[in-house]
Image (cartoon, rainbow, N blue to C red; front, side, top):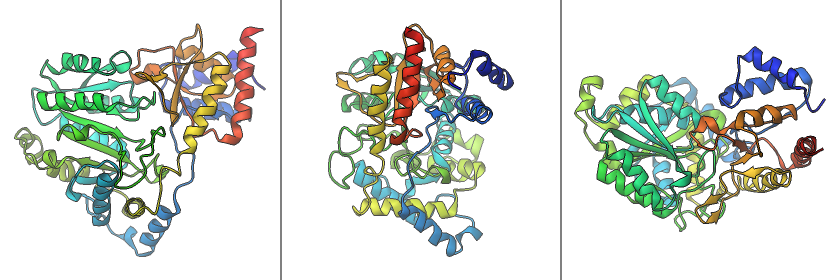
Length: 436
């Protein structure tokens, strides 16, 4: 069956109304590949969607089962979260990031997607003169979609050519306009897996202080820079964060990847105590309250979902508690992603592909949840279309704010170590068809 004909793939693209796969959303690629796989009966090697590919911890599962047996499903949780989760989240942040955030300022949300959405809305509402957010890209495409849903403004730039001290001048060129309310990025980065250095985080923090903007730091891949051991509670090294250099921060801590608990849609938004307790007069007209934290919880989260799955909160509380006590090394559970990335990168580079984002300034990029690839003389849309013909899927960097529009994001989570030989076979088939 492989490779599929171009006409065969084009027929499904037409059914989905997709004209350029380089512009297609993640979910459109997912739907397209599902249909082709179903019709052809050919299983795809899927790199398009960042879903966990490892089993969740029994610690979380058992805690959630126990909570359900206690009857929590019959009652609404408090909107600001159950006390156990808030307490353990605060301890977790101290143990693994080495910063102080009070339990009150740790708020569970329906995944970091909701946490980000609520944070974007809040930051865009606290000062009428600051109506624009700034993304340090490449970034998670759906966050831009959230801004479109909110009808809020944003600007962005690709950080590739502005690493190290160069980042200061680039950031300041936006901040000095006076219209930026927040700076948004992920670390480790989705889609490139670059990791900001302490120097870069200090630059971001210092400029956040200088221009009074809030930094929204997405830690979806918490402690997953496998080049160093970040998994010992209370001992350095800790998860890098801008929070060491500014009090103007919001941290998004997801349970989806590091804890493989994506299906229960749960995250914790950690708002600095300074910001949580701060009053913003501009909030009064719109929300009837001035306090940032009060508004975030009882106006925004309450309106969006009226809280978070009651039983799932006990699951994350139990996993945080076990990690805090040194009984659960959550990073050991996800290190396999690094080994998958290492093998997959070699398969692609041996076949003539290039790694698009390959360095953290002067260091080799870590092997982790994502990596980026390109192939000579093809743009991202063309490359996706061709790889789909060989039963391989990915997404274009074009949707991530990257200037490297020839590149694709490859996620390792759905390709197990037992599938590497099949991936190698298909990638070599792709190569041979272009060299014979």
